[in-house]
Length: 217
Image (cartoon, rainbow, N blue to C red; front, side, top):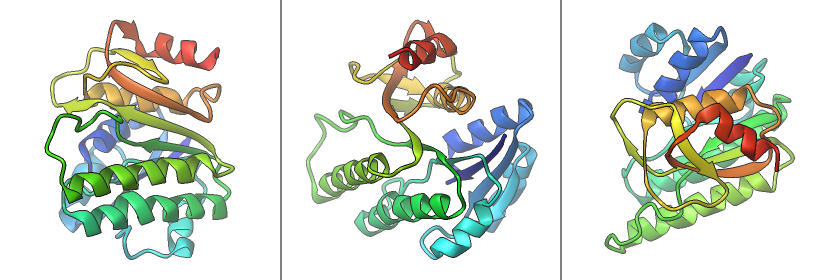
């Protein structure tokens, strides 16, 4: 398959690019900073430079043309409300529109676990982040695309185990970025996992088995 990753320089996206490339898929990764290109190429991805906040729908559709699936893994990363609005909000809407224009049906979104910052300090930045992520999810769900929304728990940098807990609603917990990337890679190869929201944490179930349970519902 040909897979286009938006937010390709992120840790989860880099792990996904490596896994997909190793499995024989063709990967194009959208990145912003020139110095990120070499690392992406080393993972097996074709590095495509572009600023999500500056691209038009036509331009992004042209970049992703010929892809079988789009993975949106971009995020502001705590850079402030305006950047959150531009990337997590308008950037997602732009990418959905571009995918439709490029006739790409399959669309995976890396979103946020609803309990991600529960118990932390409430501030305008947090409230805006929660609002934007919810609206982005709703925007994709309302589209006619073949979407999957993945909501991982707290991301950790430890090695993945290949075992997760995944369902529409689960208790909050942590999950290695490696296992998030592996779950995304597995979803791409499972067309029977479609138009569903999946919460994800570490667990005891092999990733393929967890997704098979979701597909049967």
